[in-house]
Figure 1 (tube, rainbow, N blue to C red):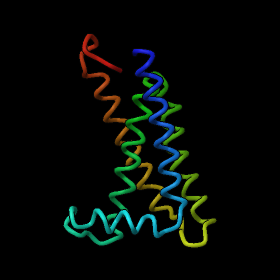
Figure 2: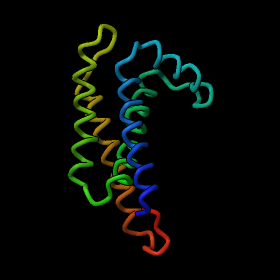
Figure 3: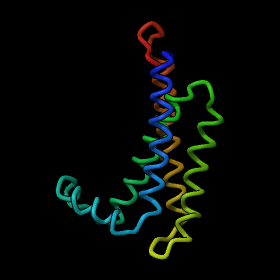
Figure 4: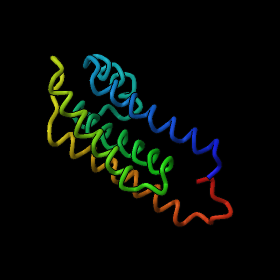
Length: 133
């Protein structure tokens, strides 16, 4: 992989962790603000339904980013993505207005696994001569 693309991918992956951590641990009004802005474009799902999809999509993106950034380190990638899901849920139980749950952690882990698998499959299927990663 091109050195500059590799550095950019790693920076994006770690920035995604920081962004997800902020959204997970910040005041709940931040999350509701995002929901109310996106809701009209998403056919106004229930807040809980939105939260389920948000967990899966955020961690699928995170898994794909880390898999892209560290293509030859799958154990590290799974460890970071799954560890972040569990650790952020534990930290969320320590905030006054949030609550971490096992279901949320499992949703995040499932999303992360999907993102990792999609990126790893793309890396295997994409012809080597046209590959950026």
